[in-house]
Image (cartoon, rainbow, N blue to C red; front, side, top):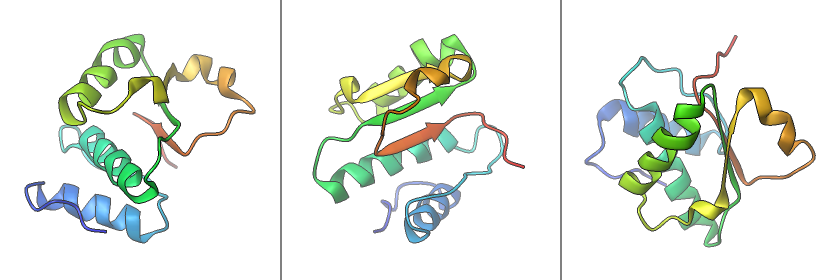
Length: 113
């Protein structure tokens, strides 16, 4: 599955690599390079590939990202996506989803070591 040509070369490469690695991975990119947009592209591709509604978890470090930024990004880049399919949480309250299953989980601003 290939991402659209209008994306930046870095974003295209990141999303294509994620797809080619079994729909799993970490986007280790610098600030402002489009990690959130890549995550939204991946969600869009996943929806098209699965041809069903997805349960998505987006886990972030701050309430502002949870309540404002991420919902706004969905509305901007995937306006027809049903936000009731998304569970937005801060890391501090991520234990609330223990035992629940999701088709896709996005960990925003996570450190990978």
